[in-house]
Length: 156
Image (cartoon, rainbow, N blue to C red; front, top):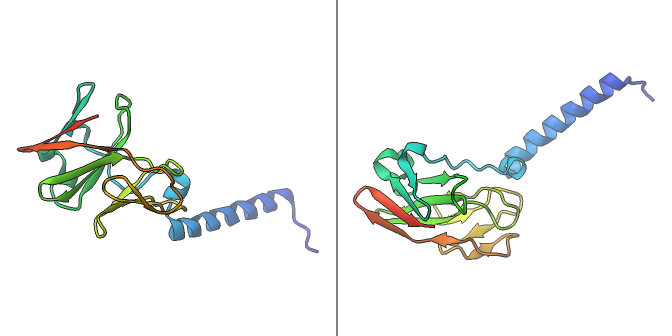
């Protein structure tokens, strides 16, 4: 048996944890551990909120200028954190940002036109919020949006 002092034991243990975490992040995505998705945050200057209506100025939100783009909106005044996805030229879908399984932030999967949790449970939700697969058992809350000119209005 090899003698090892406490300091070396802690160093080697920490290195093992770092390597394991890096490997798991590569396999499952770091959102499993951080709860934060790769979806970009909305530009604060593009958002106004008056208590029940959220308005997004699309000319100030580059991620939503093209079909397939998505942003997350996190604001303590909102009753729910949101994900906004541009699914067609004149159609946006808005849903709760957090997966109903573990509360990890969702991502918009533009290739398959759905919301997906990047965490271990890999829950998938249809655009209407229905759970398609994965560990989540509850649907996402969705919100209606009205597109007028360069402005998206969402009643929350």
